[in-house]
Image (cartoon, rainbow, N blue to C red; front, side, top):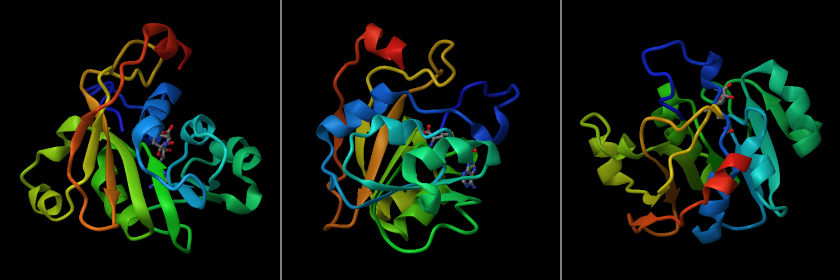
Length: 193
Ligand SMILES: C[S@@+](CC[C@H](N)C(=O)[O-])C[C@H]1O[C@@H](n2cnc3c(N)ncnc32)[C@H](O)[C@@H]1O
């Protein structure tokens, strides 16, 4: 999810890969099963999968056909699904859904993912928490929020205009609904991506 270039032409299908340091900061602290079935439902070029240490068995879904040859070597042909996650998600249950969804359909991605996994973790704009239309959903399913203190650059050309956080919904009891601020990331590490 990126608000990059709001008001200007956006990349086709909201193609904004997640910098790997954002994934590293999250995985340092979040309590997720480190093995099991993980789903990247809009995997793009597989940036999040690449940034995750070995352990999970990944399934990758993506709308854009040009991503298929990039994803297949990472997760295997059988686990690579070309298609629309909102219309025809991969079958079965997953332990974890981890992604940065397209900006325009983030809420639909959260809802679809929550039907398919115990843990749903998404990189979203911090103000995803606040919206009159989303308020009933948020009151009902309050996520844990992990704020990134450094703004990601989704284009490699400077940072985005707003703040981001990882939102974690999990079904092992009621989510704590806590807010944590993740560790700082050095400029050098951010430049590496
Ligand atoms: C913000 S990019 C993030 C890519 C990847 N998740 C990452 O974090 O690097 C969003 C991705 O969602 C894909 N996408 C958009 N709508 C989709 C849909 N309905 N089903 C599957 N993928 C979709 C886009 O093609 C794009 O690759």
